[in-house]
Figure 1 (spheres, one colour):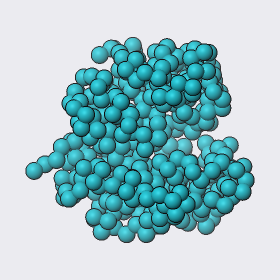
Figure 2 (cartoon, helix red, strand yellow; figure 1 turned 180 degrees about the vertical axis):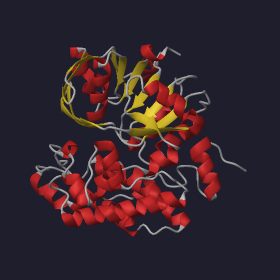
Figure 3 (cartoon, one colour; figure 1 turned 30 degrees about the vertical axis):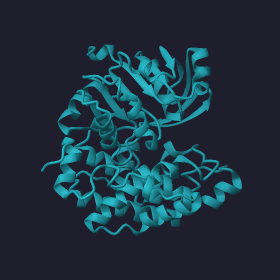
Figure 4 (cartoon, rainbow, N blue to C red; figure 1 turned 60 degrees about the vertical axis):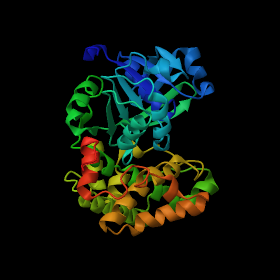
Length: 369
């Protein structure tokens, strides 16, 4: 293991967030490997030998290794930052399994709901039992967008991002390492906390589905949060948020935040209502709506966030009518069945377990007999 000031990062994923993270880390002076499975997407970065960053942070980030070979990307990396949609966490874990070694730290940015647990399960299924710390961030640290093949923009860096590991006793070690590059990362109590303080679950699917006609008629030519959240939409967001919090309480999560509390923590926005808080957040200004409803706000956040929350609500007797309605509407719009393809209890290896056994899996990574 390298000393912290000599940390080497591997960023897996060269989308909006991956480009922003790789460039920012490089500008900070860290060595960075950037991996993407589609070579054509990273070829411009390889040609320029880096990424141009603009916005809250500006400059040119020189990337040491740009590759579509995951073994090359992981070699000698101390911290592996996974920055791909949550529906790709399982496949990324499969590719990483032959190469991850003792002492490496994997961070899902973010894990959505139960991401670290799914990643760990896949590693074990593939025979990797090495001493790798698997962790997840509660949310993505940046509000960012890719502005070109080798350019990214950071609209805002969030202030305090909880990170938790499986097992939870390794969280502080993970934070010590990460804080060398990101003082914004703080310790989460457990992966239960980071999974259920997943604000993408509250905001992304509801705003997208409730603005479906506007997205399709304008090809996303409006500000997603500022124009997409009207008073009526905000009321639905409040109910989705309430259901999420109640499911977290059923799992004995003591540190679950309301959406209002989270906006205060992450963006220092304090208002009397969720509608006012969203509209007062400068970090949301300038973020445009997606051009289609076939977007990760549905394809990621429905199966990897809302489905597991609903599943836990079902077995613990918590009403999730609003969340279930969004899942069913998404199934209709995209002609699919996210209940089957999402992170249901069977996929997470939690089917038939008691409350205490489920908590033990989240906290220790083990099923108690």
